[in-house]
Image (cartoon, rainbow, N blue to C red):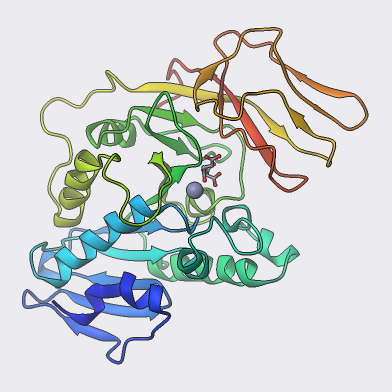
Length: 337
Ligand SMILES: O=C(O)CCC(=O)N[C@@H](CCC(=O)O)C(=O)O
Ligand SMILES: [Zn+2]
């Protein structure tokens, strides 16, 4: 296998490859760009016009998606997968990956869309670098298709194991076609965002015009302990995307895909913040109207008012000013185009 196919090994060891460019026997070019960043270019005759950004390890302890990208890249480097798409592989936070931690100083996935400029330190620099890598990859050329999957796993268990978060931008509708493809990739639910955000997928969606998603693929575990996370459907879909084959076999459908929208984000404002949920509560647990969800400074209270409300990503340990949970409600998909 070509040495650049071992991007994960190189990244975990903190090594730069001696050869930065390599060619597979079928003429695919691999180019190392930066720590944890590798561009794949198919031979011109096979290029189908898709620019596919695949990222994982934005949270360093979310290893199942990191291992998935490693398998894909090794498949390309072994000449087993034959790309028709241009691809940018990114391991988001190499230092956190080496430490097996979500982040080193601060959550990298809260530093995009310029937020890194108001901050400093390791993750702020990396967010700036990732923005540049993504912007350069997608380039200025119009007429190509831009797609970004930012792969994650969640801190806690979930009633719905594999789900997507679809960013939002003023004046832009969510695409039914993209959701049909996600459904065919094993994604069971999609959360349609309704305001801008400072995550990586929100950046590529709103600033770079890509179709972009955060994919949550099960519970975070250490390297080598992901046998309970079944990514077969997604992996097959990514093979198809990479090789320019249809992901959807048969009639496209949204049947079986649950849609939700954000009702409210619970923001932690102070050290007095208290979240009134059991520590082991699962994502997508339903909460009854009237339930006292959280309390914070100056007697502020979060009481559930919505019918059919569910909770995701509850985390009272986030830094002040950040999202400590999301209350979501079912969505009928009327806004899809
Ligand atoms: O399990 C949790 O509490 C967090 C899981 C996680 O890392 N989720 C992403 C979602 C990003 C998005 O909102 O698109 C995150 O919080 O960064
Ligand atoms: Zn994550």
